[in-house]
Length: 161
Image 1 (cartoon, rainbow, N blue to C red):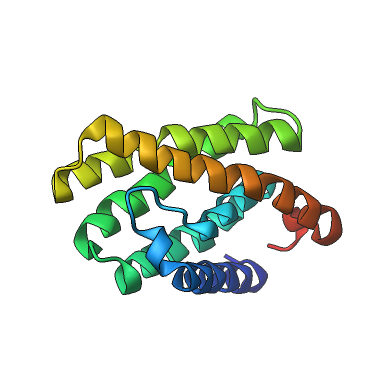
Image 2: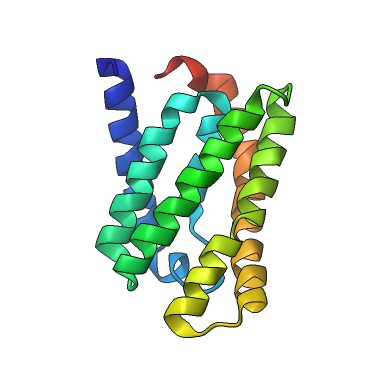
């Protein structure tokens, strides 16, 4: 990994943690409006951002989660699995908007992983947990898609790592 990629991912992880810390009360409920999840969209522009996102999720869950052990397994696993699926699917999806929408749908769908975590940890009914966490994820990712698209027009995320 070159220095530019390492620094970019370190900054991304720090941003993920900082944004998560700001909205901490809303990021760990069964609805989970974790605004920092918009950073998942960066992998649409360049797969190298996976390192910063996953590290951000790891340290956010380590420092702020009331379910540290569960979140380190399920939360980090959810992000890693979903981003790897995105990276694999990107070659079949042409265009930024279709990729952003696919990423949004993918993260929303895979919230079943977090729903399972909530079932194990708190006994939250699986489908209720999936519905509420998916609703929060869908909201954040839909709001984040045009923001990341607009920022990419100015910054060009693909060349920053």
